[in-house]
Amino acid sequence: MNLFSDSYKTIEAPSKGLFRDRGSRFIALAFPVRKTDDIKSILDDLRKEYHDARHHCYSYMLGSDRLVYRSNDDGEPSGSAGRPILGQINSNELTDILIVVVRYFGGTLLGVSGLINAYRSAAADAISNALIVERRVHVSLRIIFPYLGMNEVMKVLKEEKVEQRDQKFDSDCSLVISFPASATEKIEGRLKKITGIVISDEVIPE
Image 1 (cartoon, rainbow, N blue to C red):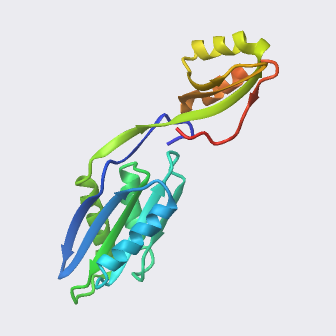
Image 2: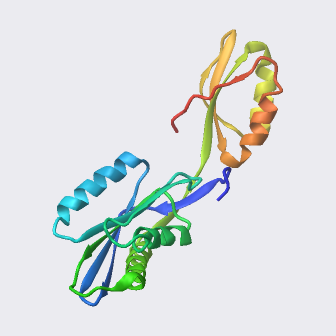
Image 3: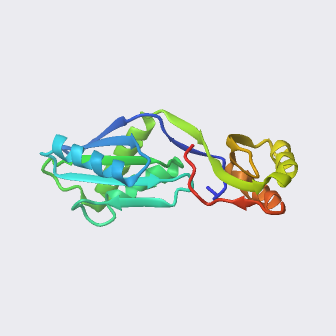
């Protein structure tokens, strides 16, 4: 997914999956998440709920650009748990998602290849049971400009079909504009040609 994509895929609500192999149970739990604080809270809750499980392995990915991610094997052989879970997240091109696979040991060692298959299959089952939705990505910026530049600014906003809110018109004017992420370069480029305009880099909540 490129930096200026207008959409991304995630899951609508928590879902669950299950895989069994030679007595071991792998319970996969998928959650929609937006920030790392959410992830920590969910993990703490699951460790309490499944306190008698041998392992709580997980992977997550955050952000519309899918650049924030992490995997944890929680005591399983390196690369045998977290990475296969992350592989399923990537295969389905998902983000803003956490998948935790809880393992109850069945008494028989599965080997690294068996573990990879188990964690991958459990994660895949949780994803297949989830409702996958597409979210739109918009950029919101505050622009500040002199009153004399009003006509030029409004011409750009109208032609580019930019949404406007929080308008303040005085000797210095300001408003918040919103538009699809893919149009960022074009719209900012046109606005920066207007004398006296300032494009704020403050974070504007949607």
